[in-house]
Image (cartoon, rainbow, N blue to C red; front, side):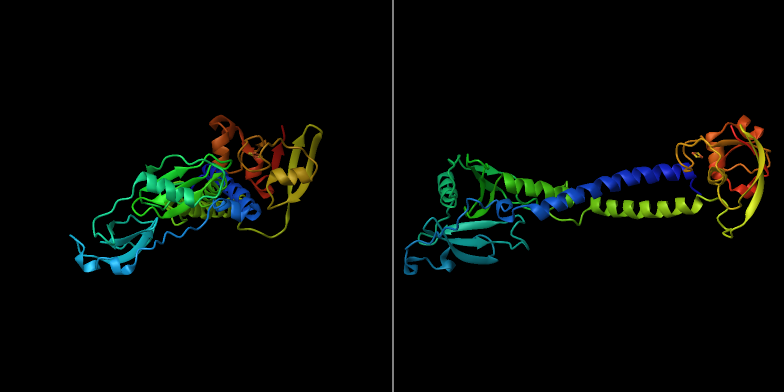
Amino acid sequence: MINRVVLSGWHKWLSLFVGIQLLIWVGTGIYFNQMDAQAASGNMYRKTVSHRGNTPTSDFMPLEKLALNEPVVSAALIWVSGTPLYLVKTENPLHNYSAQQHTLFHAVSGLPWYIQPDDVQRIAQRSYTGPGQASEAVLTLPPFDFDGRQENLLWKVSFDDEVHTDVYLHAETGAVIAHSNDDSRLKHLMLTLHFMDYANTGGFNHALIVIFAIATLTLAGSGVLLAYRRNPNRAVRRKRETDVRVIHTGGCETLSLPANQPLLFALTQAGLSVSTECGGGGTCGQCVVQTDNTVAVSDVDRYHLTEDELQQGKRLSCQHVSSEFTSVTLK
Ligand code: FES
C-alpha cells in the first residue's frame, strides 16, 4: 500500500506536469482559433510558375535509350526552367517527404543533368512576388521549420523582406517545396507545443504523448484513491453522533460530534479552532491534539509526529474520525 504522503506528493507533481500542458493547449488553441490562416501558410509572396518550354516532343530521346544502371521504378517527363528532363526513380518511398533517389537526364541529349545554384536562385525568384532581394542558394540539411517530417536535402534561398521569407526547393529538380516566413514559423512552433512534438516527428503519435496520457490517467487514479483514503473509517457511512469530551482554552465540555467525520472538521463545525495549513490534507502536520492514548496510530501520524509524541497520545485530528475519541485536549 502506497503511503498517503508519498501518493499525495506524486499527485502534486503529476498535476503540475498535466496542468502545464493543459495551459499550453489552451494557449495554442486560442492561437489556432485567432490566426490568419493565409499568413500562417507562409505563402504570402508565393506564386505558381510554369516551367514548360517549347522543345517539340519529336526531339526527345526515347526512354529506353537512356544509360540506366539500376532497375527503374518510375520515369516521368518534367520541365525545369524550360528544359525537358526525364526524372527517373530507382525507388519509390511512400511519402514525398521521405528520402528520395532521383536521376535526371536531358530529354533531348539523354545525358545526366544536374541543377546549378544559379538555376535554383532563378526558380526561387520566379516563385516570389515580394520586395526582398534573394540570397545565394544554399543546400540545407533537415530538419526544416516548415515540416519536421521532411527528410530530403533542400536548396534554401532567403529573401530580405519584412517577414524573412525562405524558399525551399528540391535538391535535384529545383521544384519549389515550400515558402516559409515568420508567420509560418510561429505556426510551426505552436504546432510543436500543441502536439508536444519536440522531436519534430511531424505528428502526435510519439512517446511523449503516450507518457502524458499515462500521467493523466495516473493523476485521475491517484486523485480518486486520495479522496477514498481521506476518511480512515470510510467503510462506515451512516450518519450518527458520538460524545467527545473536549478540553480547550475556554474550559471543558462534552460535545456530540458526527461520528464518521474527521475530528478536525467536526471540531471546526462546533466552533472550536484547530490549527491547519493544508485544510485536512494530511501534509502540514499542524492539527495535533492530545488524546487519552487509545486512538490507533495512522501512517500519517507516524510521518509527522515523533515516537515520544505518539506515546504521549498526540494525534493528527484530520486523520481520525470523532468516534475514535472519548476525550481530547486542544493546544
Ligand atoms: S490539517 Fe494538516 S495535517 Fe492535519
